[in-house]
Image (cartoon, rainbow, N blue to C red; front, side, top):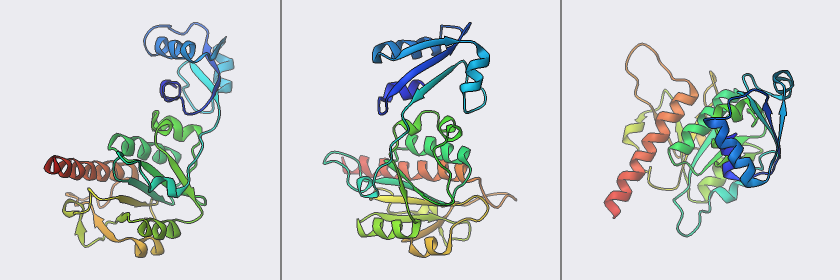
Length: 242
């Protein structure tokens, strides 16, 4: 809620607050932001608020706002003159909205500049995904494409390296040499992993070296680790360049 109001990317029509809610702490900041943006605030009883909420545990406040607008894939490959090189995360068939939200949160925190998802058999930016994203969805641009394989071809044509994560890859993520270049990190679906065409169309396929008996990570955990490894590579390159 706070990031929805702070980002200002979409119109907030009204904010509903449960009667008896503590007006201190986070709620105080939310109310201050509503005043600054001229958003109407209405007090309702807890039962009404819970009925309005589309997720569990609304924490005493609910907003009615415009939906998040997507962007075209081309917009994600063309940063401004002083902007960073594109750092995208591409999700191939991730269907759990909580995983989608968690990936968005990690990606944004690591400096990603955009997210790409498929139109079919993919999680949407539902209230559950937005809650898991913890505000990241208000800042991270998202392009929804008809098909991930075709999107990868378009990214390659735009000069973006496409790097997939796969447990059976011959190369380690730690040896990735293109982190500082325009890059798209590609992650497969829960359980199924990467689609055949998706894997074939990536420039590189790398693994996360794991120690111990567990052979794989949850997609959101893998995304977090890989995103911050790419962020580390980009930071090292920037220091050396300067």
